[in-house]
Amino acid sequence: MLLISRLLSGLFGLLFLAVGTGLWLNTGDAAAELGLVNLAAAGLGTVRADIGGFFLGGGLILVLAAARRDPGLLWPVQLLVLIALLGRTLTLVIDGPVAAGVPSMGIELLILLVLFWCKRAWVSQPE
Image 1: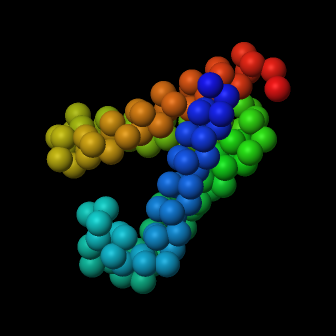
Image 2: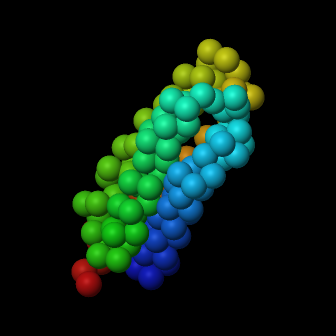
Image 3: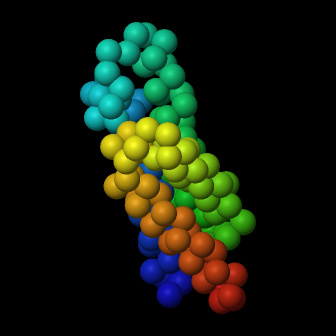
């Protein structure tokens, strides 16, 4: 279980890093895939800083957490993903399922569940 939990946490971290890198290096196309089109220069900077930073920061923390098997490093990513999920839930209530991105909500919920499982696995089993 420990190996699987570390692999999953690390894979989520690498996925976050890939998304963040894509947002930094291919900002216009990556933003368009997220539904953000016709961004001015300030909008591109916001995508890189806010969205790219979210994914790069979360990815780095998850990779470090998996490498160290440190459950204390998982909570910042859990908090960020939970807040993102709450924002999508608010959007679901106000604007409907298309605007909320229901498939993305499922992915965020899966990430939360896996990270909670990882935290329990890491705490319950000594190294």
